[in-house]
Image (cartoon, rainbow, N blue to C red):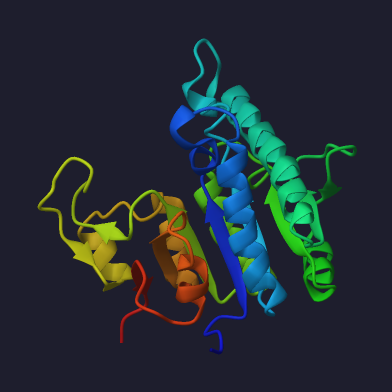
Length: 237
């Protein structure tokens, strides 16, 4: 089956890589995710990946640390995750490159839009690390920004749940899942799709967001083939 999207930005949380332990990287989970990504990449999809750093540190929440210093710590955690996950992708036979918005010469190439596009055009997966390179911005915002910069058609946000709900489905068994909703509706209903800065940017750029459960085997391919997996947030009208 043909893919509906040919160039994507995949947003992974650091916690997704940690699994039930909540810290570090679970090799089995990282391998499973890498295999899912490798399969669709080998089928012709260009992929940029932004990974959070919450499995190592949630920067601004660190005790006795300023927001600026904490965010710098969080950006470094995303670099650690990206370096590690690039190895899992390499193990699946996929060429990948780490591009970081924070200059760490031995860890990855410094991020520029032309460099990212060049690697994508050379059939490499790019791991876009270091957030935006600035404090006060989340990896959600980095994902939205990088998606626009590389010309991505959609942001795929992989989560622990299977879509966007009107309340937390982990706490409320009666929570309603939206199959499809507009940016405006999601904003007016205060649905936690992404942080407000990232979400406003996606709305302005008319970037669709698909929220889905990645750890269910085959879901990534199904999303790309246009199946109704998860929830899609897109511009109305």
